[in-house]
Amino acid sequence: MARVGKSTTKRLIVTQYARMWPREIFDIPGEWRRQIDELQEPGVYILYRDDVPYYVGRAAKLSTRLHDHANKSTDRYFNFWNFFSVFVVPQKSHLAEVEGILIASMPTANRAVPRIPAIELPKGLARILRNERKIRPEKPKARHAEPRP
Image (cartoon, rainbow, N blue to C red; front, side):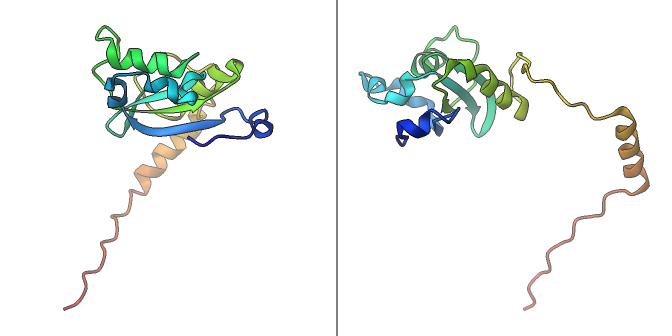
């Protein structure tokens, strides 16, 4: 992860991120996690099953929470993920909001409901859209023309 200057850091809610790191890094012995300063920070993380988001969580110290998910067989998510992404959120007051945005943006196994009010599709509009689909069924997708010999 690249370093961000201090003047920029004060203005950003998320200062750094890492995408799709393998779970196996938590199997490597030694003090290597202390060498990745960014994982010592608070932040929000996504656990993936292959390339599908499985769970979104937040942590006061990313490395500790991810290590627990990866190495404690009693952890609820222990068997269900193999990659992770992290978002460093230095101000703990923003953790819940960033977590809520990620939970709201993708289907996951999270039981938590974001504390962001949802905008519901008006019932009358949903009915109109359903009726419109009945009247005008989807057109078959165009096939690509085969190259001529």
